[in-house]
Image 1 (tube, rainbow, N blue to C red):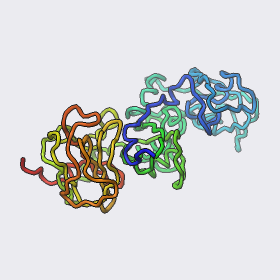
Image 2: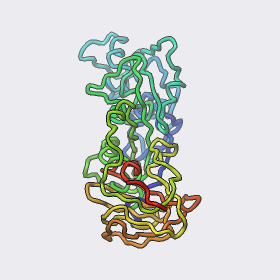
Image 3: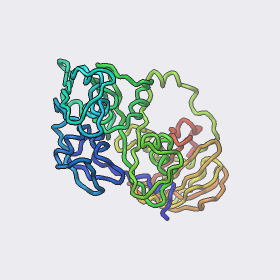
Image 4: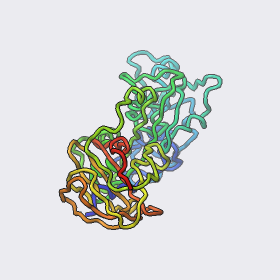
Amino acid sequence: MKNAALACAAALLMAASPAEESRHTVQDGETLNGIANRAGVPASAVAKANGLKPPFAVRVGQVLVIPRDASTETTHVVQAGETLNGIANRAGVSSSALAAANALKPPFPVRLGQRLTIPRKRAAGSPTTQDQRAARPGGTGDYIVQPGETLNGIANRAGVPRIAIIEANGLAAPYVVKTGRKLRIPHQHVHTVTEGDTGFGISFAYGVPYDQILTANGLAADTVLKPGQKLVIPALVAQPDSAKASDSAPARPDNGFRWPLTGAILSSFDPQAPGGGHKGIDIDTSVGAPVAAAKAGRVIYAGEEPIRYGKMIVIEHEGQWYSAYGHLSSIAVQKGTNVATGDMIGHAGSTGAAIQPELHFELRHKNQAVDPMTQLGPPPAP
């Protein structure tokens, strides 16, 4: 089995978002309705574009054409199994607006073959379809809610899990969004599970708690990951400035961490940096410089991270803290080794994607990336 803890660190696959695809290859477990929901296109339009017949079964590996002009349809013919809420969600309008446009009465039944009018209102000066699609996975963005829109519809078209938008904007049940409200659309990544991947390894690599990854993918806590399985990695959106100000506790609380080596800071902690963020600091050094354990703990990973960090060590500390050391030239400990603060664990280098000798150093608390500069004391004298 491949090394588990961080071998997935840069195995990031930026697949085309379902909200952008013009063609979609059916994956295991997918249905026509599910594909249409994520694409923000009516299932009937996908079925028509691909010549599908009732019961509209799709097969793994089948390539479906996604009709992009369908998102602007003004009428919809009800298909087998469809409901008013489902049609409204896929069309990106509220069920009440859809019911009103078609003079439907409670309990709002729809019948097979019924033609429904889709209300397509847009306020003067509101964003065009192209503007609305600007906030997509791969970068955070703001989105202005349009008349008749629902949270589900917005999430479907942005290709972002509904829960991610809820958490990014602090929305409360029943999650009604009002016309004109500005929503933060968080970016996300897609991770393809490889042999040996673990929940801890994936959450550590992306700096996202594993329970949030499970929630974003609708998975149970006891889910067993399978090679080839695709996981949506929800983004953690930075707090508003007001929240940051209220949390301005004294800097550098003493949690027992010490500098792993002496050197100038080449790159600072920046979780919003392009390319998925920089979730640690890079310390200038020379090849062969000894690297010390920042705190006592147990080595849970010691090996080659083949994509970005080269030779790497991860240590687990008390209180659900973790420290990571990358770009090493050599490793002096093994998985399972207990180390004390200051023990030499390896030597600095420039392995992996480093362009000069440096130590990439990370701290995590409960799988959340933490700026090492807030935990370390003053740097040691050279």
